[in-house]
Length: 492
Ligand code: ZN
Image (cartoon, rainbow, N blue to C red):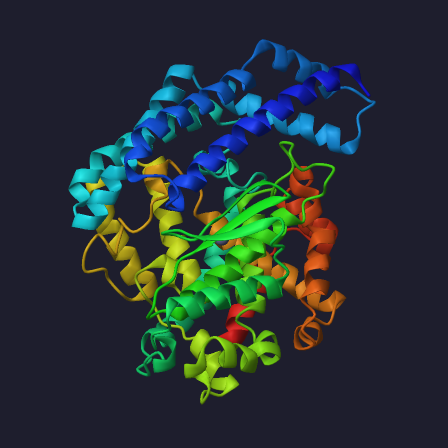
């Protein structure tokens, strides 16, 4: 093996271990594993770990190793990708002065409880100054990182969805607006309510049993993964032998745990499908947030809200976990799980209205990143956009601008990846249907063929390919949101 690469490997291992430790701390905190009173002290340890990562990435020794390896001709493809990704991290980190980097981390740690309280008390005013500071930091970091020819928003987006351009987003969202605003309007006027069986209370024990059943049915490997409970469902991973998902049980909203498990299960299958040769390295994880979301949405929506999936298991699920559905036909059940109407909360939105929640956030992010908007004006802008695109107006900021934690966590430029991912899912699904008989497989309870197809074409590569490269080699074309728009038009 290349002698210099051997030195790099030590750094890769160290960085991975530091990252794994941070992941475990946050897993512990978010799954009610650590005592409430631990937060302040533990945050210091987490801060120390992140400084250690910062120091390693910025060390002159690592930089010279990476520079030497950039032109090396005797590296495997995997090794080249590992070098390429570390070089990117170095480039991103070295532009931020260490003091600002640390100060920003401290600000974010303090911002979370401020946002939480503001949301709880419908008190945007108390949160606005912190939000302003976060926006100012973000703008400054963007100015350090911005490459020639790159727009401000592109630099923000690059952190989450490398390779995507602002014009791709503009084209995507204007297509959505043009084709789907009239459909959303139509659904906004519907008077038939959501069927009662969707909100019939189901005891938590049955819901939990259904969660394990459905994860197992999808192909989640309990020998390499666990399921826990958290306030907001999420997936996390240490490597391809330790992938963890969470859900949340609501007695009078049984479909939440069910579909959030299918969603997180899709994320988990991605991480479980990473190749052994790259796991525990910096490229041994999902390539981007958009591609990650494509895997969760594909399972949740294209598969999990489709009829063929339920044809195979509906009666068993009713018998074993949801006896109140026994008199409900499969057709009615299908309509129930696909009930669409504009609502205020993004995480509860149906497939049709979901992308508009994202578009609103994208437009607001662009506004505050590129124009000098007073943060006190943002709630008003938020409400106007909800009126414009969804025909509804939040009655308070708690169900309006305060609902998401992303901005207070410094994640600006993140939201579009949810919509990109959902559109990528439609494109992949469309392609997959040509390659394998998905409906036939679903009716035959063959979930493995689908999982293997995705593993072969997407999962195993980790960060070796970006979203567009995956789409190109898989479907023969780059990102194309037509499949998504057509899918929605067809379904709704
Ligand atoms: Zn997700």
